[in-house]
Image (cartoon, rainbow, N blue to C red):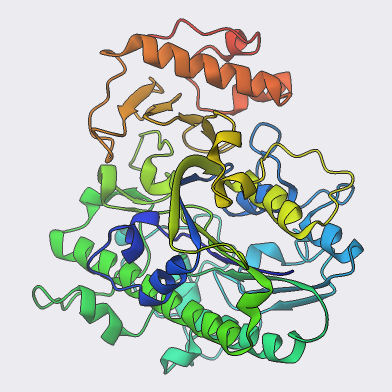
Length: 477
């Protein structure tokens, strides 16, 4: 079978109509859900962009071992496995971090196409035009390390780089979708293929046509600067109208991505590829849009001293898989993670995963209706050398090893409190200690290097020296 994987960066699970959202309108992906198996409890493994793609390409949790770094050239990855099996392999992306000459996610792909210009990438300079500061500095993420001081933030740089845009078709998700459609026309009969399509949108800056934004921000006139990039800090920095405009820009961008993924799916339909092609849609993480008084996905703000754990808005992500011969429109509530995608694709296609040492599980039993063969498990998510720390999720609970208040742990009952507003770590100490022990066992089981325990969260959290020994810590609850 052929394989098409489409990843949309920063796409929230709860913003899909098929997952209960009733105000955006995601018809294309909602239709796809009706021919797919949807995984309702799917969580990221490693955070953010590059660690997540590493998990997807290797089937391994990267966060216990390293943070943001290039693909290890010495290990097999998804693309090399399929290439060795005789597949035509193609990468199409506008996600700049996969390329840029240093991350090497094009390794193993016989063809790779990078649609340039996203998030600070400057394929062609436009020096005659001075930068135009679109968003006030106190309303967006200020990049102190930006080498070119004329810009100061990514919103300004992005607008300067792409100043020639006039129409919807100029946007990156449209360019990526059109390129993908053309590739499918030119390769659908050329033998089995693996096609990886990586949309950097819905990642900020959120710059869809403003007429789309008005669909989601029509409550009252807004005449301020367009809120196209979050501040990676407290949501309280925005007025009520500014925050509504920020959310409207995200919603419009998400709508646009959904629309043009639908364009690709329509081409798959026209070419009769659904009959012999596995099609996947997923994301790497979500985004705070005022939730927990946050806008952004991590703390990059001089005046916000909070730790930013991986709350549900970030860690709970969509996954839908269409497989020839399997009935669509079904859903599963079993816990799954990003590391499960590669073993699933190898299992469904029969491609040999020689040399892989994967942590993930194939999802085929769940898709075939044989959930009894699915291991009882928890989902483990984390970042490395950044805000927050390890998160453990089971059927009912989420345990945040490093909470926002000085690193003290947090515990939430997702059945009763899906928005994670009521920390029950004091009321349910036995549950907290069980989840903490599960985390310790996991880190030991995957072989976390001893020197990394102190790097998995900020100073002031639990005693990772005890966790190294596989025992529960006596944390202050």
